[in-house]
Image (tube, rainbow, N blue to C red; front, side, top):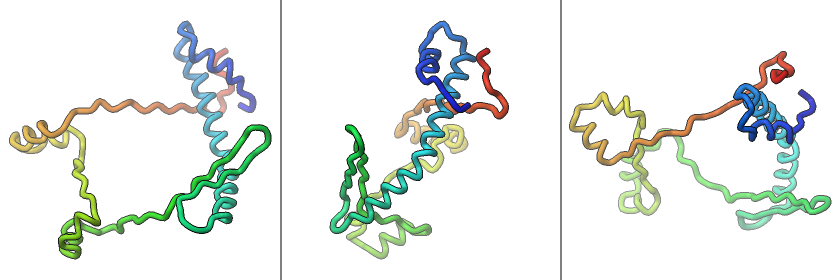
Length: 157
């Protein structure tokens, strides 16, 4: 699939009379185009990151703007370095090491180990009841992915 008529694919997607199979084909073609565009942009983005890093001195974060032809512009935001906790660090160990400064250095977040309701259903009723009062059941959005199968050139005809 070398040439994609974006306008016609979008028309198919927005046509309430179009068959779902035609919409899937149009969406898959656009999805493939997006993936190819993202892949094609990677070397350019790497080049722009490297160029920005070579221009940076002093305090971060900083933005480096490169003007293009016409009314185009590329902006690279160079972030400040950040810290990441090493594996194996525990709340208990850090509380013991830092004492009263623990709450100044760290932010402790309460997070369910497994947010699956089926996992919580395995606990005694007292625990289930308590967790039900401090949680809300969230209906997650289904994920959609598309692809064009190898060897398939046109599924709309």
